[in-house]
Length: 113
Image (cartoon, rainbow, N blue to C red):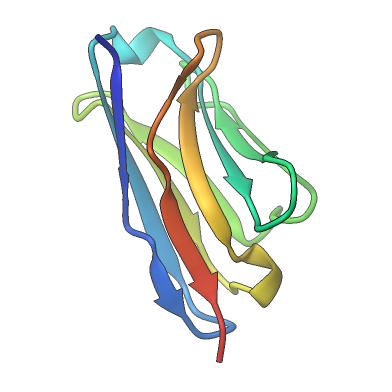
């Protein structure tokens, strides 16, 4: 079966950086677009960023210029580099395979002084 395992979350001060990773197994990773979503307490899950199978990217306006999504098809892994973090970025971050209903367990990101 498909498995997605996120890692890299943690507690960081405002202005800091984190790099999330999501390693995928059970599919031919290279042919799928991948995305990151996040869900803050009391809010709906929202889209953060997408990378297509050929590496094109898209970002939510709230993270554009601060976050970078990338992928390494040799490692079946998608990354989310998060810079200039703000308290409003606090959420559980999930990766997903676009076109499939497969999600990871999420990784908590907390931005606080």
